[in-house]
Length: 325
Image 1: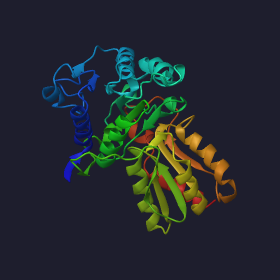
Image 2: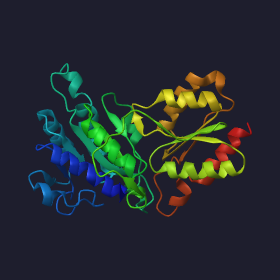
Image 3: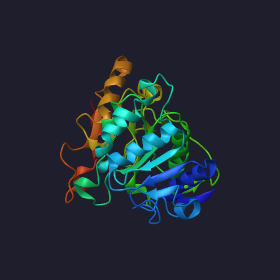
């Protein structure tokens, strides 16, 4: 295996796809010679040509409109939205076109070859326009899949699975981890099944659930809890839509407790959907209320970013509160 950071792993997945499919195209703002604002597409235009890796105008709706057309034609369409905060001008194309193409035609045509990559979340001092986590907006839309990796190995394997999937997928990349997260990644092709959560750490007392960049934080909280004699079962959700109800319910049935943490604001965040479903599935097994440790219901602050993000101390406090209930 090679040592890669998350950007290298994503680049490797894209490289394999471009080599595999002569019609595959990568497009978005500055993804060509510049290699993208974070350099995720570095070297790909030089390797595959300007007709397959190219810059678009600064119009997200146009990027996704073009992507829908290309994917409907049958070519793998690898669209990049430069920041997840800027995905909203494309909201109509994604939720009213990408998600519904298959259904409007009775499956005679579809855009299953569409993969939308976009960096999300804080940690880079980006302020309110470069730090949002909008996964819950799209989780309300049947016809889409939503995936979030936590490290380079996951990023490559999940991205390859997204590209090979027969449905349009939004792949949210935790930009705080682009260069901070490194690890061993196979240079060859591999995929990680979508819709399956991963039990990262087995435990008996409480289940702690997160995804993406928040996984590092809950793992640190679990270490603190272990020092106090609390055994945490830590789970990475990985797929927001569809999400793995079975794995989470099985864990909570065992532990009787659940703490959910995500960076997006708490109100109507995806943690609320998880809490409602697990309450229904595991009601008679719960020993305490399901708790959420999330971002605040405010625009993402620049000066107070550290106070906004749910850190390990906040997660640890929720773990203790749940245990003491």
